[in-house]
Length: 180
Image 1 (cartoon, rainbow, N blue to C red):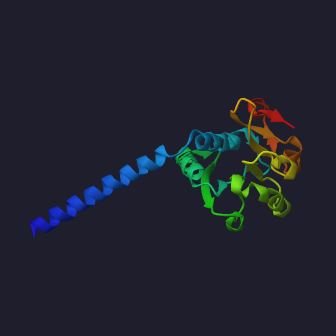
Image 2: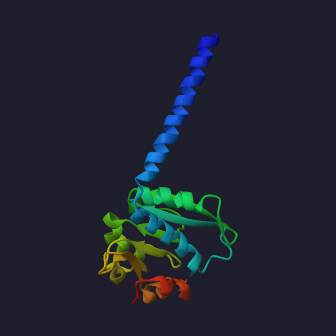
Image 3: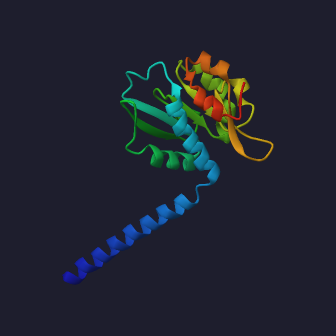
């Protein structure tokens, strides 16, 4: 009987250790680009004023199509608050899975082309962030871009922010590669 308990205990320990090892491997696979995007999204939440932020109990960020950015953002926002609101990070495989009110919707490169469709359907107060250059012309407020030195940055479309009733703080504008 004791042998069965010891065997079970050893198997549970081995499972827990392998799970921890798997988590470490997944963390290592997160690239500097993924980390930059996740940290940027987190900072955008703090450097933009939303029309409904005073009464919000949750601050929801939808990540569409990029599980690594989602995982990194979960780690960043875990147990943190923005004002009185708690962060809620949701993952969506595609734009059809987006639901509820999201203050930020991040569209990975594969889904960035759908930003115009989402902007037309959305209510005000949503920050659309895309990973494909040129998407500010289609409604994205912030777009990640690679500069001529190969460095990742972001551009801000001020007019799109105004249309969405978002107020971008000057500190964020200074961090941007460009403000158009």
